Figure 1 (cartoon, rainbow, N blue to C red):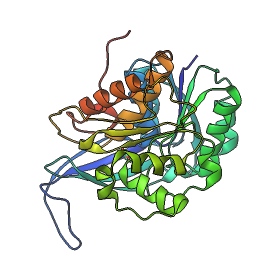
Figure 2 (figure 1 turned 180 degrees about the vertical axis):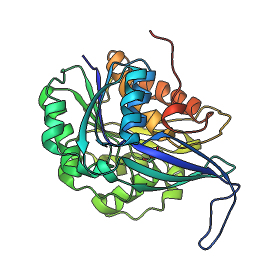
Figure 3 (figure 1 turned 90 degrees about the horizontal axis):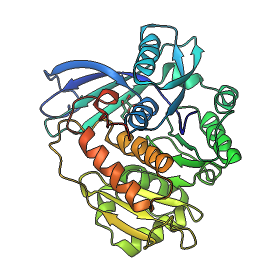
Length: 315
Ligand code: RIB
């Protein structure tokens, strides 16, 4: 039985590597590659390759992209629950510059057809010691259903509120035990839910008490992990639930990495965090964060998204 259940998107990524990200009106020459992606699938691959028995729930078109997803899940031993969609399998157009930074345009396709009913069926067997992980590239009622199924089973529910342009309301936030925004998503959530306008570029520079206070306002009942790219991450717990940690809030520095491509780095972090929580529930939370940070750093040393997830030796 799966110990990590990921509900989310599968995309066929079309990736162009360019010296600089294109400005409006520009025509550039770059090198092209295609590969599997989608935040949901990337996170499922990370959880699986980090060692957890993993199930992935998504919607796929009845086309080559959908068949590719099925083949990849079988190859990596991921249990796939795929709703067959009349829409084409999801796609993403990605530019990656010489520093490994990216910008992404998504064509949701089949991902937009995932239903709460299908998710409920796929997550009918979630165990109390499992972890449910969802993002925002699927319809929000399906995401809510995933978290509800996890909560009903007593499983830990992680919500990665990505991408930042998808707005969620209070009713979604209360479903998450652990929220994992990057700095852009954190800034968007603060504006919407806390009424604070903070530039995404300024988030990493905020002092610890201020970050902690903002996280507590955003998610009073749960833990918030703000991923900060090269600046590592910031963790904030409610005082009454520090998840085995000594401190209610702290920063963890990023490990040095020979960065080739940051596409999917956040997904690597989330998948590895879910896997570590499921595999080693007795550890203090900080150890899960260290594991996820290390895993995400290694994922940036390879090009691509899902296929850049490091395969760890079985434990
Ligand atoms: O997080 C990276 C992913 O975002 C890419 O794989 C792309 O498909 C988009 O979903």
